[in-house]
Length: 114
Length: 137
Image (cartoon, rainbow over the protein chains, first blue to last red):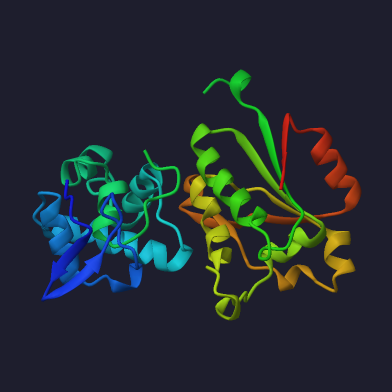
């Protein structure tokens, strides 16, 4: 867990809150996602990107981040049972597929997330 | 979850979406409460009907336009949104002025079904009377 209050990307500083969520969600870039992931000790794979991109699309459409069980259901619908699997999602994001993936996706902490 | 521990929750929404925090708070409680797998209904009456009007634009008031979030309710298995006909009529609104809100039926290959039902005052009263828990916003 990072203690700094900002991420550094391409010489720019991007502020975040005490838990690492962006102060201004409009400052997100894919490069920043990799930086946030690194601070969470994650390396972004294609599977990680699939979840992050899904969350960003969902937020764009509904202005909220989905809770985990919604994420599982929607990923199943979109990518099939292999991807819409709670265990597989936790393997990608050990601190919670909604909570941690939302942070990397530059979104607010999900409502009612666990 | 056993039927015994499943209660009928009704969230009453009576205020305009912006200008007070009630509408957004109600919506957030509904989304959080959805995790408890209760039988949830939402009712919109008085100025609360404005919460579902299509084409909301909050750019001028510097608030987040959370109206899109109502369309996510189906994903959270909240599928019953009742709107009072008399409240719509008193404000010169019709059902067609409301956002289309649907839920997807897993058993029918994700067929989209409407979540909004416009009901009259008498039906609304029955709905309230038949609920175990009524939360008013």
